[in-house]
Amino acid sequence: MKKYNFNAGPSVLPEVVLQQAAKAIIDFDSTGLSLLSISHRTPEFEAVVEEAKSLMKELLGIPDNYKIYFVGGGASTQFFHIPANFLAKKAGYVHTGVWTKKAIKEAKFYGKVEVVASSEDRNFTYIPKGFEIPEDLDYLYICANNTIYGTEYKMDIDSPVPLIADMSSNILSRPIDVSKYAMIYGGAQKNLAPAGVSFVIIRDDMLEKVVRELPTMMNVNTHVENDSMFNTPPVFPIYVLRETLKWMKAEGGLEAIHRRNEEKAAMLYAEIDRNSLFRGTVEKEDRSSMNICFVMSEGKEELAAEFMTFAKDRGMVGIKGHRLVGGFRASCYNACPVEAVEALVKCMQDFEKRWV
Ligand SMILES: *Cc1c(COP(=O)(O)O)cnc(C)c1O
Image (cartoon, rainbow, N blue to C red; front, side, top):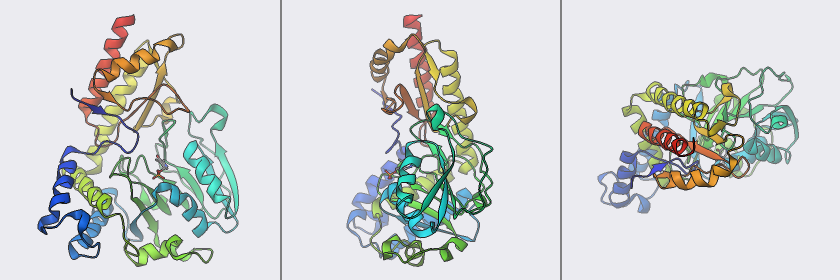
């Protein structure tokens, strides 16, 4: 049976990328050696890192006064690297769910945290807007897409202080104005690569703003100065990341990818709103295009387990909602084909016909 992969992360990657990665494990770029057994300092691999950086720059339109690097440890390592480098007195955090909660916890090891806005009052079902940003903050931190709750910032906010964004689960899903951010980072395993590597896009002026002496691996300058090669970088995930970026470019770049993401999200949300058995869980204007959350309609809750089985029998994989939200979550990342979303919509329609 054909499988439709809606896993939240690690998640679906393009078929051609998987094929290329499989080939490289046996023979990396015609070197006659496996990608898994080469030195990260071979010119062939250095070229992979360079190409990954230049594709990222091209696809996202990253201005010249930014550096890009790749590093291990996942997004969770950045939760403490960021305050270690930039939190001297006080940082502002917009609290929108589990991932900002974790980031706030780490920041408190280094200084004062001011939660400048929060959506906790309504169980993180919206993105706070119109809040004041104090000018005395070392930086303002946001999570651009809340993977678990299914909310997303639909625009790039203006901030009078350096803006730092976790884009783990929506990087390269839509065009952004990079110049509004001091730093953009994320784990690559949602939209770009297998687990093991994070990307960091950082504005040059931030590199001079490191506020304390730090162990070498924690200092952002180490990774910039050594071009992601201070220590052994995650070679395989970086290779796959490059392949994914090449695929994106071949697909028509970020505009084309964005258009398709909007099409998929509109299709699935329309069905959630139409279907009498299901309902959405978050404010419509803040609905994520990447992680689409829904639950059974009121009074129909007892059908949830039945729908899980029904969907599984039709090839749907990974649609169980996060335990904190319940219900269902279909993660429709860049590599999720339109066909998968069509199949899920059809599945929801067929399920409704059985009960209504
Ligand atoms: C998955 C995720 C993380 C955690 O990433 P790790 O690489 O597992 O540390 C952080 N932020 C967001 C938005 C995520 O989706």
